[in-house]
Image (cartoon, rainbow, N blue to C red; front, side, top):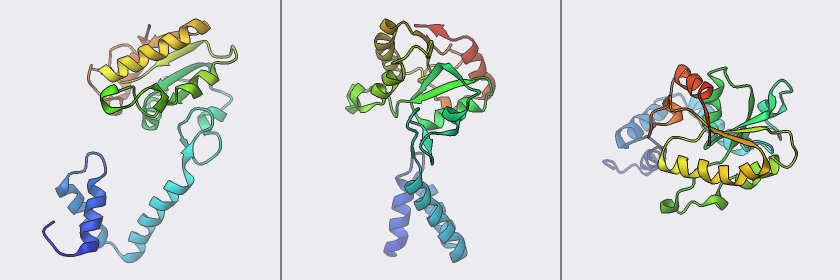
Length: 199
């Protein structure tokens, strides 16, 4: 750091830990906070602590919620026979923007990646399998990114699910290989949903 103000350096360091935030952006954010009136900075701090304390995993889909079961899982209008499996909670919101999917979701909280020390046991796969214990679910849509890790995860889950008589499909490649769902537009995602393939 180029100053000896310890609290400022600590604030910059914390911003730098966020994904996609480099040193210069972290500095801009820190100075922006310091230029706010104290009550606005306090509201920001309160919102951060409040979100971290009150938001947890949905008992059903493992997505984020501030209730026991999220609004999507509780919605009686959703198609309970189809579950779209995604890697991260943010992927749910990406799909919801398309307004093309009316089923339920399941969040894995990561992808199988042996190089990073992430195996199936570190993901929410057991919770997914528990949701298939009755005959309600007819189809699982594997909506992981089209990367090596995403494909490995989709293939692993497919091998577990198929013996249960549940159809397993994969998103069509309207999403570029190596791309992130987070950056796909609504049209691309809608086409990918329509053209999904069984795996």
